[in-house]
Amino acid sequence: MKISEIQSILDAELICGEELLASEVFTACGSDMMSDVLAFVKEQAVLLSGLVNPQVIRTAEMMDMKCIVFVRGKKPDLDMINLAVERDIVLLRSELEMFTACGLLYKNGLKGGSGK
Image (tube, rainbow, N blue to C red; front, side):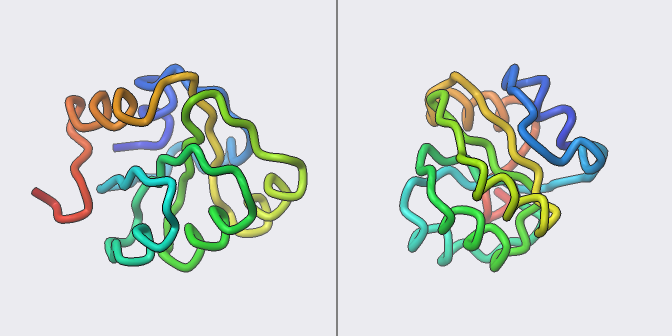
């Protein structure tokens, strides 16, 4: 699924990474606990989180994730945005709750980390 499709499905605001919206992703992970995300080993994934701190960007980078969707209307600060730009990570912002956002992506064909 293209990141632009994720943006559309979640009616998400683009924060940064417009030039990367055509990138393909194959799995998604939803968590506010970055230790759980580190246990998630699939590459080219989307991270959905309501946690707004630089560790989210750094975790996504370590896991080779291309996109972070901040749920529940959370908004990253300028330092986080700059870090994402440096790391070529798309940032999106959705008003949806995490459960709903994950469900919509799953319903539209994006699978969880296990690929099931």
